[in-house]
Image (cartoon, rainbow, N blue to C red):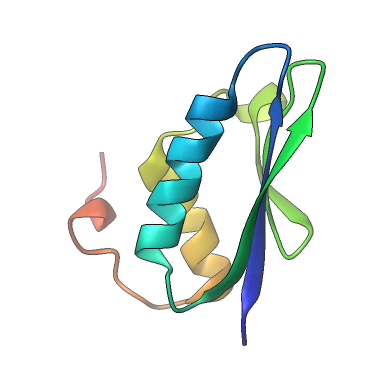
Length: 91
């Protein structure tokens, strides 16, 4: 089954580079599991990562994500049980 990830970011805050970098990290890690990854411009300080339409990370509630944390959350949705290698170590 293919999955879609969406990263909605605030254009007013100029968070496109951060969203694009996170998108690259996710596409590299989940290149066979993801059908699409979309960058969605937003406003008002938004930075939300969604998998198949369901939010897995919201900056307003959780702050800015570390890539490892987002990878774990995405992995749990798109490839449960898969190891993330060195990213799997607990901080």
